[in-house]
Image (cartoon, rainbow, N blue to C red; front, side, top):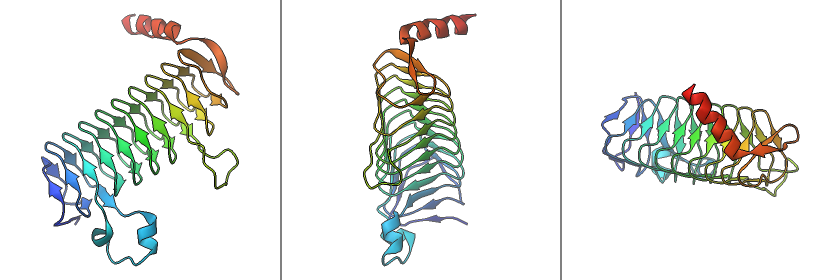
Length: 226
């Protein structure tokens, strides 16, 4: 059986009896919470004078009509906007902010202090490290990997920024410190080692500009109508 803190405010339409909800978590109206963990305490609390997760957790804030499927773990101090949706087994670490209408696929990993804008679509098994910024309407294909350390393991991190409307293809790798410009497209399997200008398509290892995003959009529209 699960556990629901008496400090939590639960307005969800359904909470699984196998869910664990710690601390003063807030779950908005109409949300669906399967066998997930919400408000898991950060590492430093577990290493310190830890007594129970509920006692030390700051809780998490979950918006309205959010879908959280089984196996999801959401740490404390996470904020999730209305109508976000999670696949199975997603991990979201502390201080992360996820906007409204965001979709996150099964087994995605979102580390500490990540910012994800409204309506972003992150597919299965994507890795997003500490400090990454993903703006509104970004698409990230399955198995894409974002990095934040140019000389691992080092003490200086260089987060990636992905500007609004960008498309990142499946199995792409974004190297620490780069910025993907607004509306840019990164092809599947590309390794991006330098900034991507707005509105272009890049491909290859290392990735190079091969065209304009507007041409990509025309081809996509024609494909959808065929």
